[in-house]
Image (cartoon, rainbow, N blue to C red; front, top):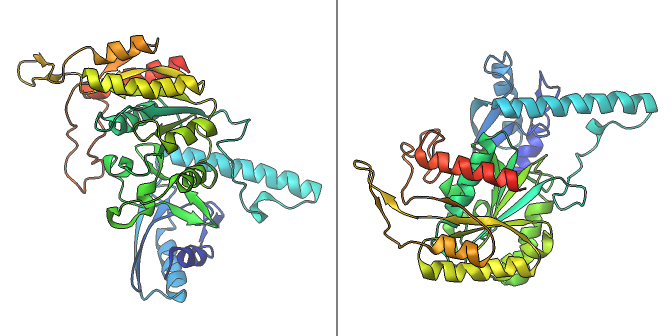
Length: 370
């Protein structure tokens, strides 16, 4: 069986409360196929849904009719934010349905959902590209924590892992599921209130990506145009280090994108990062500021700061690009439990931690500047 066959079978299963099929409502998730055995999660609108057993029977029946020998089904409840978004969407569709019936036309429920493009001129989404001059400075860590911090501030946030050769965002955020694909439309995975799309979702077993420039640009454009993002306030792009093809494609696709530069305190890292900043200025992109990552190591017992990678790189880079040093992030790693825990992620800091509060301050500064 294929995911497409499974989704097609699930179109026959209606969610009784919401009066539409599981696929259109994006309630069938985490689909896994093991030969003739299918695993999936069905999202419920509320914890006390009276339709749980009925849905289980109908989903199992539909998938077995489609060819599955065994169906492993579990249920989860939509987050409060997802419930609000879905309820608002259904309300609007109902209004359109009433208006269309009065006008004698077809209703939106009889048509495919239009695919909004983040690249359309009337989009209000703010694009922020996170760039660096070289790898290993923590650019992706800054990306995911800034995105989560913005979501904690109540913003609707998406992340595009545009580092197509060195994708790492899914792993850093502890994402184990894959995006659903419906009628060639991709639905991003949501984690910590952030919608995520990455090349890592489409590569098996951490295989290397061996592509040339034009193929990279096409994949990147698909991330913008073929993904059902919904309404977003911010899209954070994790760019590959340096000034190569992907970074150039992003600058050309997003003429209004802002840029955040990440460096370490080391003078060489800042020197190389200045090239990425110069590219942003050359393509008339606004630089929001500089993030100095691994700025120091703070002793947990005595509180003393050790500047293991030197000092001054972030300030020097900010001065050179005529911008500000927004935050200095210490060297460290979050303590988020063990793999398999619901909130586990290798790289996302809790909101109550000192580093999490630094990312909260960064998010607020970014919001002010855009």
